[in-house]
Image 1 (spheres, rainbow over the protein chains, first blue to last red):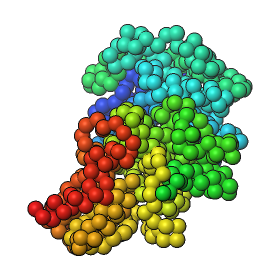
Image 2: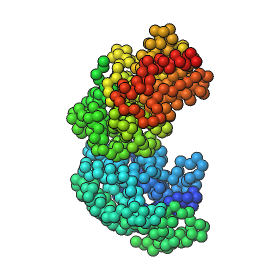
Image 3: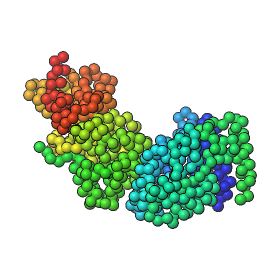
Image 4: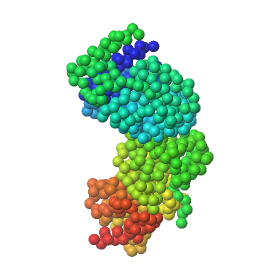
Length: 276
Length: 311
């Protein structure tokens, strides 16, 4: 087993390099979602670049599609894509490496970008798995600001209605969206009780603690008859104090000076975690 | 008078297919009755999904099912299916390239007296503007059957619009020429080309027959395949004729008329006129009353043709 805590910070570095090379990206949400993606791709999901169309594979949808740079870093590390090529071509003229998921690329199941799409689509996938009596598990990651989109709640209702215990909805609860704090823009709390009222098994964890994320996903596997929602409480911009918990870093492009500071902070984190 | 609505034929074809194809799935949004799909839900409960009154979820779920190899047919009133869930049609179906068949029922002004909220006079324009989305408006029950049988064989998304009420036959069971994505030439003449889709094909044929009685020869094209549009058929019909008329149950903007005018304008010099619903809330009434009010009848189309030819 790889040192996943260390890997999470290495992937943050890859992600920041992709953003710098492409001249833009959604760095704040990329940094908050890294542990969630790392646990899914390197510990939880049955998925492999050697057999990407395996009918028994687990399925992932990034509903908060703007965290694509983090997803690129993970897909490259997993072997679906080539990091050097992605970094070189991201956002460039004519590139296939765009700023949101594109399922013409290996490893990506569905296109997203417009918010509020992932949950209904993942409900359809989980329904199909139930119809086929398949072993697959379906994972969808939404943002928190995204949850003001009503289509999420349509999907949430139908997942509970059909008892989709093969579906896990992970909320990257970093509490910030482009205009500020989610509770000031469009209040979500009490989010846990809301999801419970919609018929979900809800688990709240520290979403930047990869072991807590993993434990929640293990608990989800033994919950029968209802879908599981993991509220992953994260820090937007996690990894460097200069961007943590700052709404302005939603899609801020670091200056060269900021970039150097971020990389230094990430290096320190890696150094501290390398022997874990 | 035919008593069988096109939506009933859709259910018949899907029921027949579901006997052997266990991947076929039908989804409704509290619309199984309106879609004539109640028999399907009763006969194949394991292949039927109810979304409730939630069209965005309906289309998103259909896309997820399709991604997993299912063959979903999502049926909901055309007005809500195409504009309430427009983004799901664009992103989850067309952009993600999933094999979702979107069945828009009670299309156009089928819900005559229910007002503009229930009319779908924008669906052709909306759906045609999405890359990778196909748009079909079959004219009668026989063509609807042929179209559905063809769609069952392919694996790309499409939007199919049908009306609520039974419509007069254009074809017969034994004589319904059909080639996928090719217009059907029902009449051939060199004075006027009448190009119609959906429920407007029957009045277009009636118009041609009225004109013929007066010695005016009309071509009638059943352009059920609005997208991909059969441009070759339009150009051939237009070049043969002196004037071109398009007829549709849709807004005058962005529908069949706009597309026909574009093709004619790019390829031959012919006066081209769009007959459609007005760019305004439609007058209250049954389909027949509304069509008569706006001249979307055999008589109305024939009158327009004569005006144009005399001008």
